Length: 207
Image 1 (cartoon, helix red, strand yellow):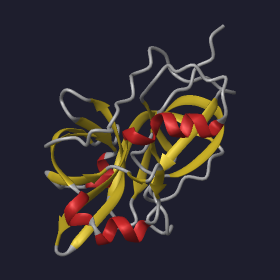
Image 2: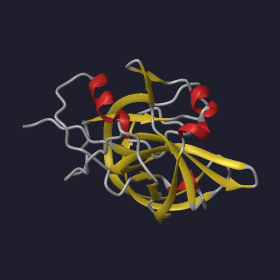
Image 3: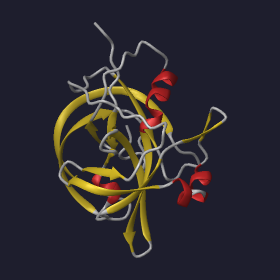
């Protein structure tokens, strides 16, 4: 049987199943490199000088669509996204670099779809960098015991495109209420992927 890796759009305890069938009898660092140029940092202007940041993943090159979690963008209709930058073949991971260069690196986008119940949002970007790659949708859901690889942008960390690894514990449908750090409440119903992964604020929306 051919081994597969599935990329997932994460939202704290919520994990929206997105992604790709990729041969994966390979080291975890190879999985990271495979998907890294699909991952973005998302920033949304919530008004009143308040901003929200999180992660997103490119799923359609032609339409320039990224997906993220609805709670990441809040009520915003337009957002900005930043793809990772490389220097001499090495990833620039320092958070300060991207915040200092935000006006140069950010790509504007508009929200074209949102589903508050499933905590999902689709953003259409104005353009893409040359290195951007889209992940592909999986034909089947993840299963208990499979590997989970997560890439995100935790806001309290000093680095971006942070990697975590774990195992799928269970897949099930759940109804619950969730609250963001800003106090916004959501009534959610979605299929969730339960894992033991350390997922932090800012990882939401990442693969």
